[in-house]
Structure formats: C-alpha cells, structure tokens
Length: 463
Ligand code: BES
Ligand code: MN
Ligand code: MN
Image 1 (cartoon, helix red, strand yellow):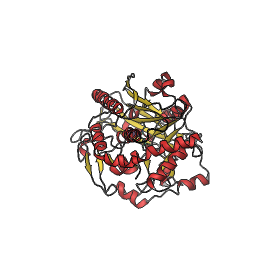
Image 2: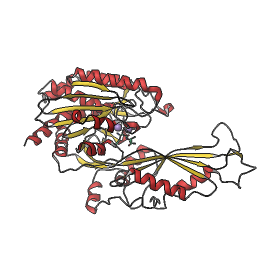
Image 3: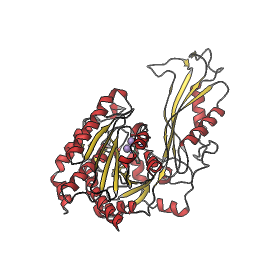
Image 4: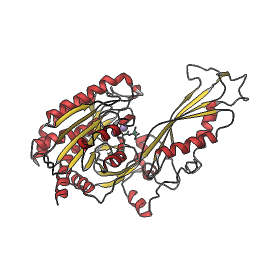
C-alpha cells in the first residue's frame, strides 16, 4: 500500500467525522434565512484549510455569499492546479420525504453502497466532494508533499447560479492564475465503472406568468366564456413539444452541434441498464426525444422541463374559481453551441406568440449558464485518466454529464483555461432530492485518486 493510502486508512474516522461536522451546517444559499449558516460553513472551511497547511487562507466577501480561498505555492516555476468546489447546498424540501434530518448526517448501507453511505443534504453535491480535496491535500502534505502548486476556491453560490463568482475572478485574476481547474462535482457511471466527465449541459431558466381576468372569478358565472389562465398555460406548455418529443420553439435547434455517428456510438458504449434505470426511479417506461437513446437524451440533447407550476385554489376541499393568474418555472438544458440568452429570447418571443388573445404573458428570465465540452487529447485529461485507472484498477470512460456547472465556461472566458471534471458521485445519489447521500467508498476513493491526479499532472507537464 502506498504511504498516502495507509495515511488515508489511518485517518479514516477523522476524515469522516470532519465531513459530518461540515454537513451539519445548513448552508442553503437560496434561502435568506440561512445567511448565517452559509457564513458558518465558509468559516468552517477556512479553519480546516488552515489546519492542513494551506496558506493565504481567507474568506473573501462578495455582494452575495463568501468565497473561500487558500493556496500552497511550491515553486512559481511549477504548474498550478486550481481546485474549485462549492460549499452551498440546495434547499432540502420536501422535508417530509427525508428518512432522517437533512442536516443530521447518518450512515446507512444501501444496495448500491454496501459499505455505507452518508445521508445528508450536500453529502455528494458538493460538500463531500469538495472536502475530499482538502483531505487529499492533507494526505499529500503528510507524505511526499504536493508535486505542484495548488489553489483552492470554494464558493457559496453555485446552487443559485454563481452570481458573484465572475466578478471575483476578474478582480482577482492574479491571485487565481492557474494552468487547469480541477472540479469534483459530477458523477461516475458506477463504483466499478469509473468515468471522467467531458461535457456539461448549459441552462436557460425562466418564469412565466399568464394573466386572464383582472380578478379571480366565479367559475360558474364566467366559466366557459373567459380564458382560464391555468388551462391556457397547460395548453401552451403542452404545445412546446411535438409528438416526437422535439421542442417546437422555432430556431431552438439552430445552433446545436450535431454529433457524428462515431461520437454517438462512443457515447452509447457506456454501460447502461434500462431495467435498473427504470427500477431505480420506479417508472414503467422511459420517455423522450424520438431517435435518441436514454444516455443521449440525458446528456447530449437539449431539453425543456417544467420545474414547478401553480395558480388558482389549492387549499382544502373545493372552491369554484376561475383564477386570474397562472405561473410556471421552466428550464431548458442546452448543449454546445446553444447560448442561454439567445434561447431565452427565442422562448419568450414564441411563448408570447402562441398565447390566445384573452391572456397576457410575462416572461422573467432567471440565471443561465453556458454548456461546456472538455477535450480528451490533453495532459489535463490524461492525468485524470491515469489517476482513475490506477485507483480503480480500470480504464475510465469519458462521459458527458447532463447537469450544469456554468463556471466551467466562465473560467475558459476569463482565464483561458480548461477544467477537468473528475467527480466521484453516482447519478443515483439523489442530489437535489430527498435522502441525498454519498458512498463512503466514493469519499475515500476520491481522496485516494486526487493525489494521483497531482502526481500524473506534474509528471506529464514536466516532460
Ligand atoms: N453538481 C451539480 C451539477 C452536476 C450534477 C453535473 C451531476 C453533472 C452531474 C451542480 O451543483 C448543479 O446542481 N448545478 C445546477 C446548475 C446551477 C446553475 C443551479 C444544475 O445542474 O441544475
Ligand atoms: Mn454541485
Ligand atoms: Mn447542485
């Protein structure tokens, strides 16, 4: 066993207990009621980062939630890895669907995680995965040291669109200067099938408001004669996809870079069990755009989904009402080279166009993000490939992720550097859902793999 691996083994309990303490802080970035807890999580990170020997550790205030920075410069001539992660988490709602408190981490065995998994909001996304990097740094320092320079930037606003990160990056470009960004905030295919993420989808998120009559009306007196905004909204949403699951917004697919047959074949080579997929989600059948596989539908194809819809009477019993307004939150996942702002405009124009005359439409854009692809013919990718190959004893498969991490394209724009998406979670870890969890195997495997990344990256860079 390598020195680093025996160090991890010796410190197993400590590494776990520290993460559990981190998970006990409800750092929900979206909810103003938790501002203090978000701050507390940043302070917690600062202390842990100082403890392991990082320098210049500081909680940087922004107009929103703070960013925690720390670095360790071995030699200015050596390459620099910028580790990015986020310590903020999604709201735990609906809370009644959790089997244990979202901020009361417990360890339970599951079928997929026979050695146990930590159940808590943020366990996988992204506190657990970000914390692996601090422990990996500790393990390196306790042994041969770090082979190149390392900088940490862990933010508190990823789940609300990283609103203040770009400004911070531009203002601190010297401090953050690096050769590559290393991110663990994605998934592997399975615990015995490692993978490296080589692409992410973008996002366009907006809210629509449909207004009919100037007040709620009696549905008997007016029903049938006045447009009902909820009925109208449902019809409009339904018409946004045709019978083949294609999105009907004109020019929506115009900028989509179609994959070659070869690329499609490669993507579909990744192991996938339709039976397990359906069973895991409790669905009888899958659904989606005609002509594409489930892997493609959930990673290389754009989508349109309603995230929430409301209006009218939803209280106890029945109230006969024809509501004045109806609302929905709608998101579109984008693929290269779709641009969120362009797509939001296309949506908005079309949505207003298809509305019947009896209603007025308001579209309010929320945050968005650019899609990203990362090349596989680089030293940066090769290092992740070699690191995973060594720690898992299996060749990792390059995969495209369906989620979004908008800062990946921002780092490219601002610093001109690429990211390596070396995540360790599983798609079945229920991130953003009730009972989010992170396998102990995954946590320790991450801590074991990260030092190998630094080793191979430094070796390849100095060749
Ligand atoms: N870590 C996720 C993104 C992710 C998850 C990528 C799994 C690939 C696989 C990240 O925290 C996230 O949830 N991002 C948001 C976007 C953001 C703008 C709110 C998302 O994808 O919805
Ligand atoms: Mn995340
Ligand atoms: Mn997330």
